[in-house]
Length: 303
Image (cartoon, rainbow, N blue to C red):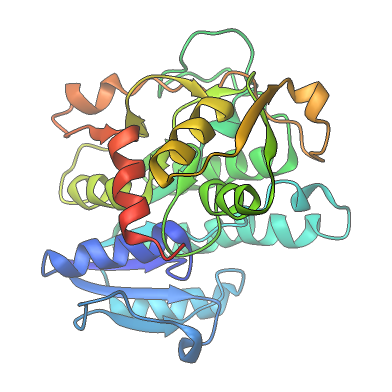
């Protein structure tokens, strides 16, 4: 199978390219960054990298046409949630998350390739306590990032019949910045840290998610899915306490409400619970528990 992957300089795209290459797939990775700045995943020599800006319709069409893939995994996205609220950034955010996704979807359709689009729990409003199912359509994104990712979903579903839309949450991986890396850095230089305890969800390790996505694109089981690590629903406070413990940091973690924390530009959903039962129903292997994912991440990441 030949697979084209966007956004391979990011956390998830990097691990998707690595997973596909491990399986012996003909993998082509792309990103807006020049290839000279890209470090190929360790022990992977078979993957090919090409520069491609997803906001450039002509470039996307030519790149995907030249590769002629069987499947496209679209990981490229603007993910800086707070920065997306700045008025001078919104045009760029829209160009990447909406226009860019339209470009990728159109090129995948022309190539006759199936498309897997990675989305987010932020397409939902975060009210209540019930987990959201993949086919829930009560969308009410609270921030601009979530609104553009929802429009990206709609761009995919309106352009293609053969698509997967996989919503995930609280992503962390070795290639790039994330909550674990940031908080460990802060914890080394502070006696105490404040972390919100009223936003509930589940973390997702990119290595584990990449394995699932690689499994998925080998099937014809199209539709909407939710995917995070197993291990139950937790708060950011619970998450921080656990990885501090595993890392060996004695920094005190103080639970605070979102209102007390008060530093975020973008509103975030209190309820980020995602129902992942559809994965098992469709025959996919769930991701491991998040505590084990943290352990493996800390062993791999250069912290």
